[in-house]
Length: 261
Ligand SMILES: Nc1ncnc2c1ncn2[C@@H]1O[C@H](COP(=O)(O)OP(=O)(O)OP(=O)(O)O)[C@@H](O)[C@H]1O
Ligand SMILES: [Mg+2]
Image 1: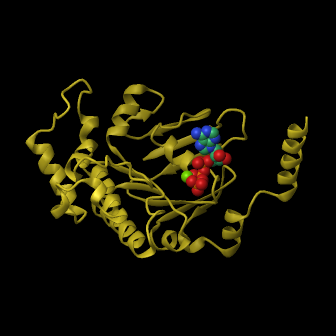
Image 2: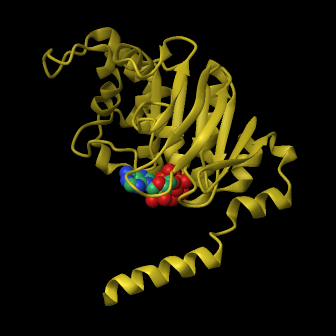
């Protein structure tokens, strides 16, 4: 379980990207984060892995304790697989080499460039097989389609033997059919392995289908937290309504004045 306690995040002087938020992510649950662009989904996800530091409050895991400690954070990250929208693969490297990168957290950073032993290679091949890409294992990553590359990203997360999967819009750049297949794969693996998954999505229909729990964010605040079946049309309107026009107009005036000054 991961708990965020009165967590807030501000970047510089701007309004907080995440206002004081307290939440627990139960072991084994598949949670989907929904919300308009800029609502704070990536900020919350990144805070769960210490990639964004709390401005106030804290993130605590049941296994390792508060992430403010460097040693706790390292242990937590080792068991947390990240899946990104842009998969962040090394294009010139093979699928196998990319997947092996997921093992780096288990190595002392000062060891040789290719410290991977037979066990790790077998583990990587089995992760590649699990995402259906075994015949591509030695192919350069940049020769794969977008959906296949995202599967490599999933295999790279799996080879870490994660307890937790954090995925930030993992299917945003894929066509609808491929997106469904990739999300279904992530969901299936998470359920089979009993992983805690937190996944941000822009597709409501996917959220409804796959989530055990939906957390809706608007303007850095949780405005919905419940089962997909409890998400009403009104909740959806609140999630996706844009900033009040009055405020927007005020900001515009302000910048216009600065331009003139
Ligand atoms: N590194 C950063 N520096 C400054 N401001 C940032 C940074 N990252 C995010 N923000 C701001 O914080 C707010 C929340 O951003 P965040 O990326 O968490 O939103 P999001 O819900 O993931 O949006 P999207 O759906 O577009 O990915 C936004 O106003 C954004 O501009
Ligand atoms: Mg985002």
